[in-house]
Length: 560
Image (cartoon, rainbow, N blue to C red; front, top):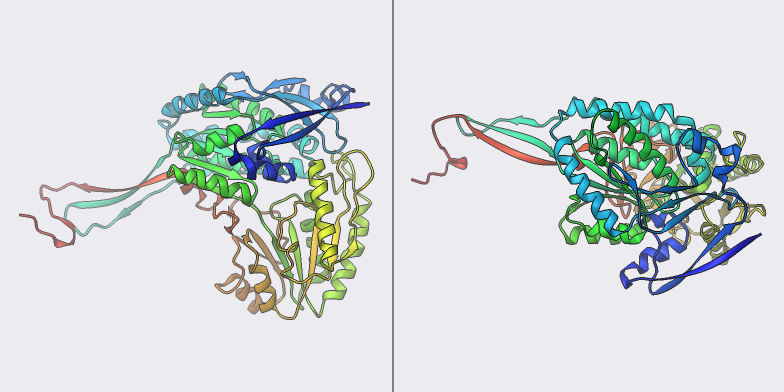
């Protein structure tokens, strides 16, 4: 049997948005737990032993060096003086292990240590920094399976996705290593004789990273690997509901730093709740704060950072559309849509939430999609079972969001074509759901619900479909299935998709690390990972050098 304890938490009014997001159970929890005046936190303390003591999960101790209770703060040494966080497995509701989080004093200690570590780290040649990041990638490779299994156990995504997420960090380390030898400025011609203009890039200092539960390791990897080769130290606050991933990942990274004689505080960790998140947003010692989470909380973060004239890198919500033109390859499109709609149980920021079908193929696609969902529903289950294709939602609150969205859709005139029910089994499992019959601009269609719900819309033309794609507030990912070059170039052109990710004949999800990842509008405008995203982690200086004996002024000005 389990017992339930009720905790009342009082906070300042600013936290209202943060806690509403947390209690509604999406990745809005990245800043932690809080509410407008007080709210109830319900925790189940299972009488059974934590999963870390179960031989089935021996990899937690034997390969990841985790314990029944772990310190969640690292500045070169492990400690923690904050609340104890209980990590719960969303597939069965059982406790995995505990993490002792940090308090504000712990946080300040981490910042000071990271500042000190930056002094020596920034002096290393960039290729040397790249070599250490490469070694971090190799260390992660050696832990690929146990770390991936931990992601599945704590977050809920299936094992192949959990391993793939760790692989993403590995890939970014490889990319960053190469980048360390190609970071470049410019040599520009000067209009003045005996002068030269240079564009020079330098590190910022300590970079703050607040990551979300749905990608508890990859988002940190995107930020930290690139920030490190650029010469920055990093302070990470992972999601409060995936603290074990944060601890295990930091142990791998710190081992590489220690082996190279590098201060561990180059990569600090401070697990915690909203107090740590808000402090990071306000802290002038963090010249850049990268935040991944909801649009609502990201807006609060952005305003706080802007108030101090800091930089923010925001990767926020997405209400992504997949458009199917009348000439699309429907076999390929249905396979892509199933993964895009139900992969990670609909908890990717790039999940397809709107399926816009040309009227000529609408009925055919809907029939095929329902048939595919019928097969996928048979493979809902334990994310560590390699036969599973859909794991649980991350929390009970996420299940409530799922139910509320379906109720709202039905009340607005929608028809549940498939799914729509909570699966009665331990954990937080729901049926992947298809809803039709709603107008393109229905309130629920324009709302991002972090669950496997897709709204199927019927469009008369590609132009109409593009207009519907662009009418939502978010602008993260989008995809068009077509065989027409004319349609492709319309889609990727100035009057096409307004998203940061514009795909053709592939799903909205599953981005590679070589391109810049991020979106427009309410998605925040930030870019992480590949391409020239590195520029966000550095400051640019225009340098003018006079190597002559004269002192001419620009624009021909004479001051004599």
